[in-house]
Length: 456
Image (cartoon, rainbow, N blue to C red; front, top):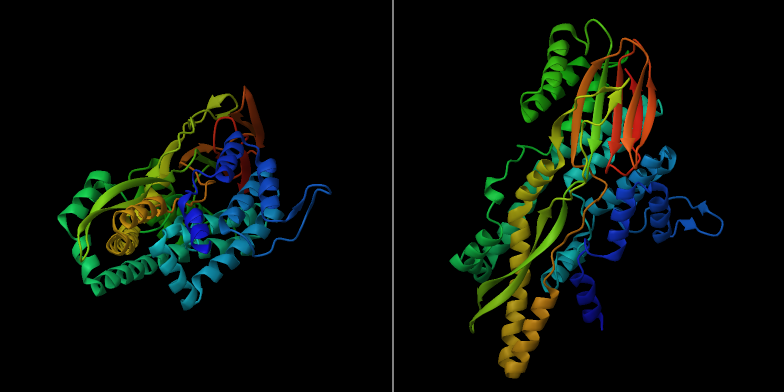
């Protein structure tokens, strides 16, 4: 019975589940409060009769905490959002320090079923955005020291991710070297041709040379360059890194030049930096195909399931904003798909290796059942292998498609309008003669935007 339960758990993809579809629908409609409350109920933290929320504790699925944290931030409940983000930090640490025995058990389960039975390990992009959104919440609340801590953690996560992925790749490669049959099959023409046919473009993807998110680094540089405790040297270093990642961007180049020559972000009149986080990030889908596998007894076909990145069209434009009825010309400078592709490509060898090990395990089982029970045994083994082949499609769905930037003078008090829904708009008054960072997040044209002002 336990085996059938494990099989059933591993076969349904995360992306296709009803719970995730509900999260997507409410998030894209901008029903952030209802979404947050429904997730709290799933985490047993919300009493629907009294309407009271329990203290957030480090239990349950880290993905649910991620979705709840960002939903509450978009509602404007920073305190509750930070509670969830604090718990997420604890869950990250628990996963990073997970015992050797548990990891071995999960590895065995993944080999017999698929990667979905492993504990979810959020990739660097999700970990970095966790600290980034938390930093924004502290910054907007005037807690600059706490905001600085979170920005530093985001930078550190990008640095250690390089070492982490390298160790993961080396571990999977060493495992395959130990198993001569897996090594031979993995490098066979049949397996390599099947991978190339189903994933023909991965080697040509445009990716970053590191796990740094240029949008996070850019906003961090602005944070570091403002106020009496400004760290101009560190801000310039970060901004130089961003400039190298995003290419020719007039606003970013101007900021970098000002820091280098004058030690500040502006010269002359005060400015407004408008950063628009918009759209929906890609999600992971599943691609199934067969590979040839040589056992000690025969050549058989085994079903492999691997994740693939799928775009989520949001219909979001970037030039619907207006200041005093004058259109704001935003220029995209950072794309989430490129950040996710960087990670996907880095961990691709390890992902393929695990899928092949799982296929090999099932191939051996199928071969043994065929020899012991004949045609019926072989059929049963084939059915099990095909049914249990499933890719790990788990991901945080509140990440954006891209970040865009505009910089305009702040010579007079002005009205910023951000359109949404059916002819509605959110209006925010901007002060005169004040350096201001205006941060906007809007996942779809139908969702109400979050607009935050940071005075520099």
